[in-house]
Image (cartoon, rainbow, N blue to C red; front, side):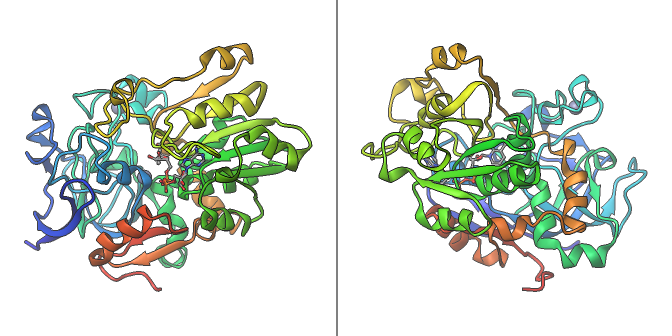
Length: 405
Ligand SMILES: NC(=O)c1ccc[n+]([C@@H]2O[C@H](COP(=O)([O-])OP(=O)(O)OC[C@H]3O[C@@H](n4cnc5c(N)ncnc54)[C@H](O)[C@@H]3O)[C@@H](O)[C@H]2O)c1
Ligand SMILES: [Zn+2]
Ligand SMILES: [Zn+2]
């Protein structure tokens, strides 16, 4: 049996690449594994040789010590790989298939999965509905920033690429199907983006850039991206977005008015989450900023897509309320404007096949939009550091050196 290597969370601010166990078709005990999940047999699963696995802003919340993630947790929920072993109960996925793994883990058998709500599967996480690989409070499924990983419910979940050679030629785009492309797209769809819409995207990280590209694909007339990071805003401008630098101004409405001629948009997408920074003269973290400013600048009857993550436990929060996820949200304003809000994980499977086709046909250019950058597994600690420092890149780990750089 071959060994394994993986990116491991070592406590606030630290990750390391360590030797770990080669995966098995069973969920074993380990850091963060819910006792009720220990010993779960996964004959419906496969073992993947990981071809690409991306670092995500969601990982950063844990690595910054802003969650209750335990030390020793193997990270990584954005996984693309080649099937090297199939469980006894897998019928339609075969050894050698090149597949994209939705970051949510979903059984395909519960009432939520049957309705397409694979982001809140009832059977995979004893703590609460919904699960993911390598993530705090998600049941303990081992992360995929590794050479090999086990993926359960393979027939239901996996998206097989039709042609391996064609897929490897577009792998930097296809690797975004496990999370951020569907997540940005879901943000745009749930914000109601359609032909001619004016759209505000909060955050120019990879998810914000994916949401902006998705809004363009859906026919938006103007996409305005806001952030405090000028390098990331330049990345947004590189594919046709308007931008606003939020560090320069207190009033987002006025900044939008300078672009659109009125201080309002049809649709708004929060791609920041609970570690939001204040605008203008507010030089500190202000976790409700994005939600409150989006209500301010979205037209009455508009929709707010909220893929940005909000947590139920934040040990690093500045006040007691925020430590349990209670934020000062001006819900009266949202109510008065009859806004709709969509929160939660992205149901990746609702979108990944269509977005794969958009990539393969050349219609979507997600790798370019997010500036996909390949590094080796060993460079992961440096990648985490640079990403945390705010570079305008989406890091793609290449554990077996299979990607043409
Ligand atoms: N819902 C889901 O399924 C899902 C999936 C993937 C990621 N996420 C979440 O999406 C969010 C973004 O992910 P990412 O990888 O792009 O993270 P990221 O940390 O790289 O990007 C966040 C960006 O927000 C900017 N920012 C901070 N305060 C701001 C403000 N007030 N207004 C506008 N921008 C502000 C930061 O400067 C940064 O560039 C994270 O919270 C992540 O956990 C959710
Ligand atoms: Zn992610
Ligand atoms: Zn389910």
